[in-house]
Image (spheres, rainbow, N blue to C red):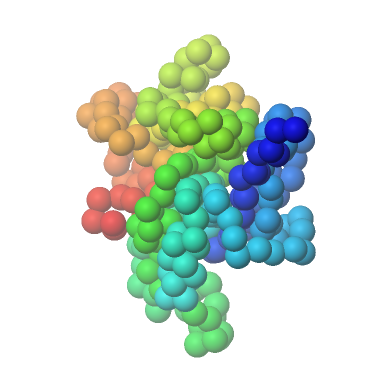
Length: 251
């Protein structure tokens, strides 16, 4: 009788976030069925009480905001062979990164008026601004099929390659009318693809929840803005909504 193959132990951890990506994972269903025989989930606060300090893959949701969060993340990194950041908060700092545009004191006074002294926070950072990240699953929330592809890649020893072309490519393939032609402001030209242009195909604009391209065509974006009478200032808030931690000067 052949020896039973040892399952890969996977642990999920959350930091500063809404836990929406974890909730998405509970809907994986058939997308995860073909790899469930190869993995063992040992930590997942949203769906189970059991916990283990022994795991091969650590999957991190949320941005890092406090000193003890940093210590906890470094401890997780030390124990894990592979660390995956998933969701905008973990990958780019997410909505929490908006705080980078303000002082900690001003942010606390705005969000927690009258209670700011009881709240602890600090410099908002994406996971890879604290520890080494091996794989990413971008988005807010994540794309379930992409998450399954990342896990499959880890099991096969081939890390999933995050798309590094613009959302506009996927939008064009779906034959959508450019939102700029409709008088809307869109981050698609400088945002990494992989979402299938979900928002722009369903009546919304792109807010760059998947993060900015590594080698974005800044001049191309500026040309589009000029053509449609949009200023850089008008685009500034959209840039910082999900990418405040990764913009120049904020790293």
